[in-house]
Image 1 (cartoon, rainbow, N blue to C red):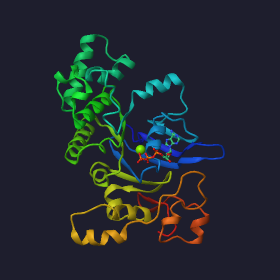
Image 2 (image 1 turned 180 degrees about the horizontal axis):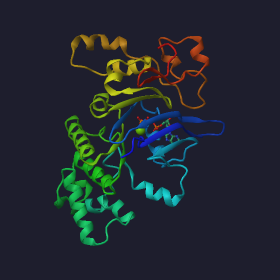
Image 3 (image 1 turned 60 degrees about the vertical axis):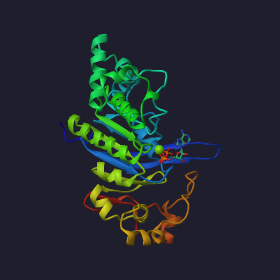
Image 4 (image 1 turned 120 degrees about the vertical axis):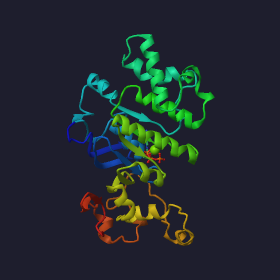
Length: 319
Ligand SMILES: Nc1ncnc2c1ncn2[C@@H]1O[C@H](COP(=O)(O)OP(=O)(O)OP(=O)(O)O)[C@@H](O)[C@H]1O
Ligand SMILES: [Mg+2]
């Protein structure tokens, strides 16, 4: 296995154009690596561009500029035929296990979708065996293959979604809020399943989530996004114990804890102000309007993402 990170994202931009004269910079100059067999957590408030990053990496969206290398292959540069071969190696698990499974199909057929698309099984018997094996891998059983999604609980449906993603033997999976819709107790089970599968199969994950405690548990490194940009990126323990960017600090301060003293002081540490619109953003640091450290310089010049400590990147000139 080579040392080359499985995923290399470089200066990636994805803009939307909602109306004439408007540009919505959903992803604006994002760069990071994900080494093989590791998990990158991606966090940030709603609308900051996490899903768009995930979808653009997989080329479910065409990029505006920048690049995504998967195992050294330029995902947005390859031909349609080469891209189809790549789609086998990269999968996505979605937030809503209710909406993402077609209610008209049996669980077996849902799981086999990728097998059928890529012609991975030569015979019917082989296909059935593979479906059974996949269901067992995710903690379901073979009897489930002939049932329909509505007969399952939320946690079980998410297991079906995971089995469907695994069916093509992928190397990389984007988990987009894969557990957010589930009860807390079920969330932990699904996270543990994802971690076990990673150990067994050597999977690489981009794990997108709101819930910071789950991100902390599963991610080797964590990147924090704000309005289309990565503002901080470090090893997970380092990021959670020594956050440098004022936005990361605010985000972490908003996490409830069992400590009553922390809870009493939490209110005054919460971030104030609304997230500004990502449409036609002003030049300068995007966090300015809410930042306690903001100076005139911040309002005029974009901060660079620089390495403040080994492996710890931050985009703030006051750190
Ligand atoms: N297909 C699209 N067309 C136009 N605008 C879009 C599209 N997809 C996303 N956006 C906009 O891009 C920005 C980033 O959206 P995105 O869904 O990536 O955020 P997110 O971080 O995943 O949010 P959430 O936590 O709510 O899932 C938002 O302002 C959103 O309205
Ligand atoms: Mg999203």
